[in-house]
Image (cartoon, rainbow, N blue to C red; front, side, top):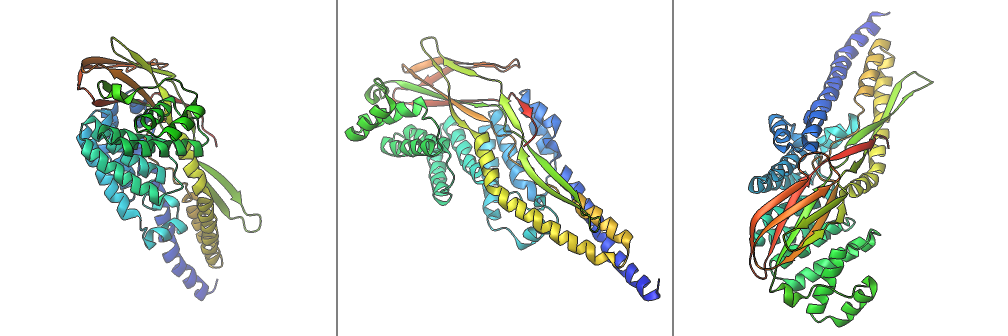
Length: 436
């Protein structure tokens, strides 16, 4: 080897080896940056130990690019422990981070193209951003801060105007509830109509509770033609009378059932027959989970109500990922091309450097499997119409062998014409298979 070639090889080594080492370091840090999401964390969630799960979250030191998802998990774990004020503080902090991330920096885009998607700051998917407002509004309703819940719903409405492709019927139904809690029946009906349209657009059955709300309010507000149309469509002959409800008390309960499926990585590894280079294309996918609870019942001494399914959030998560997949694949293919070019440039100097760099670029190709992992898989809803006064309210869940399948709220006092919102989390669920 000539002295000139030797000097060139040494010069390349000084540049490429640190670069290869840096890539490997990035790959390792990407793997552990949200390490609390592993088996122990899931175990605490699935066995109704949110305090231990929260301790894991708070003891972790998330990188700045993971700040949003860290705060969302923290907020949800706090509300699982009925620490609603602190939960809303964390949700508000997450909203601030999300707003800053709307304009992704050029540096992050370059990192995503040259290394992997996990190098970008995590910007929650659109349906996740919608749910931030939803859960914050639910916290306010349970705290009986109805004006604050209304403000949150108005912010939610502005977001949904911008993200017109997001059809999350639960968000619209919740908006109607918030307006009812604030005794704005005209606005409640508008929100319930939008919920109806969202269910219809998703080709989903219209929940009975929403059918009854639409009939009740169109009847009360004297919208005879619309009432007739809904009556013919739903086939219901009896529904609650608003005048009677104004003299009664009402309890609405949400059960947040199961646990959002986790994301995993699908890796396609290829070796080029022409030059022997290793290439990897890595894309995320959701595992498949099933909930254990198949029945929920809310009751008092005088009446009871069975739950119905209001939302399947895992379906929205899969739809969001499917919409994003073309861009994910395009970035992955672009990285293969960029990394291949870098490796080729080193081959003429030394095969060893070329091989080391190829291994480094191969290992750093990782799918972005971050997500808001503490979300429920399903949302169930129940409603009781009661006489004003104090009530002991009981929730019974069927299907799980774990503790926590019964819940009681004692001496719940509700005045005439008022409503009370209750909620309960039971994340118990199981993985049916981990493949696309």
